[in-house]
Length: 134
Image (cartoon, rainbow, N blue to C red; front, side, top):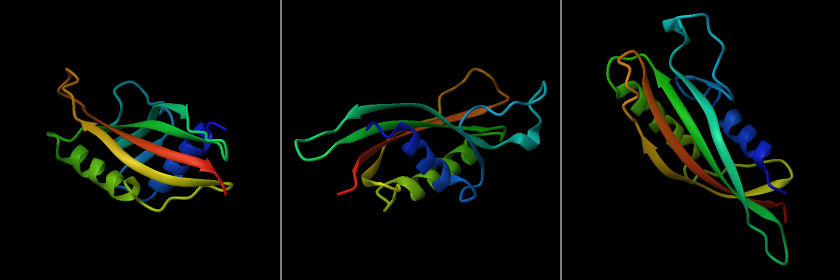
């Protein structure tokens, strides 16, 4: 099993209502101009899975990318939200029904210059190791 849907649900459920931003699995549809009250928000973006099987059990390592968007003047708000996400995911005891979450590791964060002075964009990546429940 590759656990992509389960990993996304785990991240969504863990973050939703527990950080200072709304969480989506796709960019929210907004009217032109993206109203300021829509920000900040987090989008669960690109993810992939690699097999993590042995002769005894099946599993996967998932790479999940989270995108933080803000209209705050400066990078502080995005940095704070990245820290909130880190506190909830990195090396925490997480669980998925019917599977075992061996680990969740933060692997990367950045706040690239997106070329627009209107938005601040942060990216964080996590690696989840998930196996069948033993």
